[in-house]
Image (cartoon, rainbow, N blue to C red; front, side, top):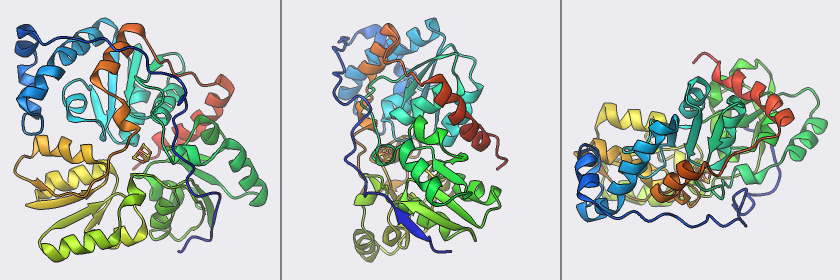
Length: 357
Ligand code: SF4
């Protein structure tokens, strides 16, 4: 089914929830022999993508963070777009938004450190109201989350009374609170179909809505939000790459524009893109998504050649080892969600988390 109509502005400039707040002074840790020795097994995991010279900077932070998170009874959740020294060396759980939300719902840790962007930390807080949820840099925002407000959703509901609302997890708690159910790119089609409705309001990613509309019989009403990272890819650059090497494999995230997806051999969430590469071990592959994900898989599969283009997410890149250490030492930046909004948002997130795949 094509999408019925798209509403709203094109993506607003991506600013984080606390853009005006300074990140503060970070503690500097010098290289030591002990840090090198303690972290040597972890360096083995990432040596294909991190030069030894660079590791001398990372090792003291990796050592300190891993010691401190045990003392704090903290768990570190890291999105697939985090850099390899975070993803492979300090994270306890890695994954896409759905995997992180599921783990956040199950954790027994007292403190959750979210290495990702603000809406992910909010989701963890919504699912764990009694726990301390920290984000190492609260300016880590998202162009999709910034594109829509709870008020926008209320206006859409007035315009389309009785039509259920599905919100991508890349939204604020306020938007989730106005929604019937959340989804991620892993389960968006299943979530829409689980509602058994002829028409669904699907927010805020217009390109994901188009992708989902191509996979379901439900009619979708979309919002004109875009991911500033994925919307920069073009079908033409991929067409040229394939022309230069017809054996190249192209896999793309559904937040990409339709002309990009038309060039892809496989389209899926970050988790399913990783599994696709693990299973098929292609000789040369383009992962049409955020750059760090290719680095993370490259560390694990050095025999696969990852061909650019890829684009960096400036929000994901705000999270660094020194900021994670500061976050654990000072228990900052704590994520707070209004309990009334959290209670309503929790219903929409839990409906998604408990949906049988
Ligand atoms: S990659 Fe796109 S969707 Fe993901 S956090 Fe960055 S701006 Fe948001």
